[in-house]
Image 1 (cartoon, rainbow, N blue to C red):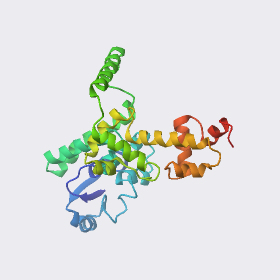
Image 2: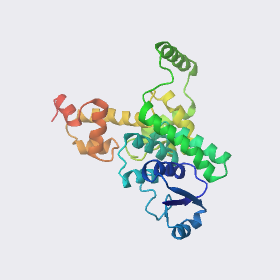
Image 3: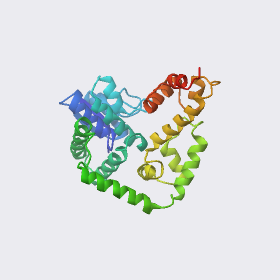
Image 4: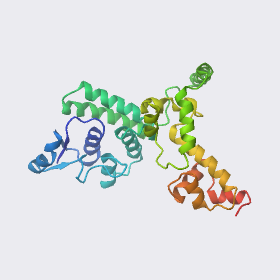
Length: 278
């Protein structure tokens, strides 16, 4: 089967062909053409268009075409789900949702810059996604430093860096204030959005964030603050769980309950009962 999309791919238009050829259609022929020719050529060549507006195989909400292919073809593989988050983060500049996203973007952008032939670019990209898939499936818990001596030296090095770093930079101080101001009211609080107001590149902010915020990623830090506030509110019986979910910036009570239990090991209701509240 032929599959057709826009020329000059970087993330989704390399990731999707990899996914198609590895899990959907082993003999797939991937065709790249200028944007304005995709639909016309798709009809002429009896090809499936993907990753452009108005076709079936495209972005939906905050999810990428890669996500849609997984759902459409019922690819029940945990490693692919891990890979999907990385692809989504790289493709939509939401590097905070996966620590590997900024690296994937950097490699993909560099390849696209160096290789002008789209088919050659796809060939190299296939190797990258093969490697990422192997990592997601077999190596997620592996670390570069494995031995006890290496880990000890790494801990010492991290402590040394913290001591040397001294005062947090101005952007970190300003970022903390922005988070405190917006965390309860801005459900879509994102690192990309904040980076613009700080005039700091999102990739840099994502990479440096944990150094100044309790060794946590942006997403984990936001969740930590919200759960801490939820615990305070749970000790006040006048608030319902739905109200607490709203007051702490969660999209709904179900989402709040899931994150609360994941963080504390208890459901919000169980926690409230353990504190003698009804």
